[in-house]
Length: 199
Image (cartoon, rainbow, N blue to C red; front, side, top):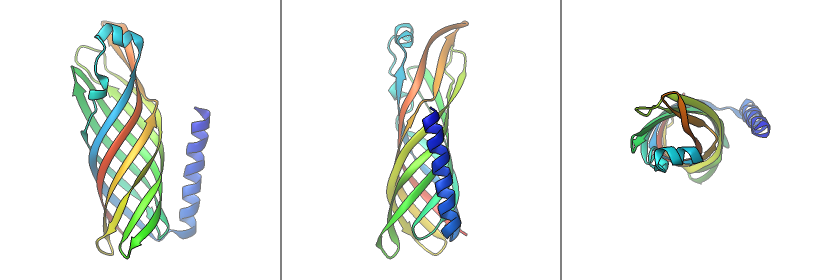
């Protein structure tokens, strides 16, 4: 965990340094996509809840987000907030992400670029299943993204991307004051569209 914290701080410092050297424009945007999460179940959770299909709770769930950052010809650095929620077999979860990302660009045409980079941040997982005590857990996320960015005008761009994150956020399931088990997020995959406005 300490290694992950150090990596988070180092990446944030590196991205800020790069922007300070060659920051051309600020942008803000909105994102919309679909997210699927994979979870690790504790043995007590399997035994007490009858081996529930937890990977179906957040599966192809609609995910909305907002972002702000800075961009130059070589790349960009940006912060993103995202929200999604899902339910399956009576279990309900909510996921909120606060992410910092850095992308490098590879031009393929005058107004078209491929991008790829890394993401670090935090995710909050909230368990809101009926009949169980609600619980929230915050964990780290680390991952990567790639996609294609199209500049439509001087101020507007759109993109199609894919992001994959690893996480350790965990929630407990309590019933009548007794712990039934726990659920930990293992990974999160998202395909998304974004529209950006450049100032």
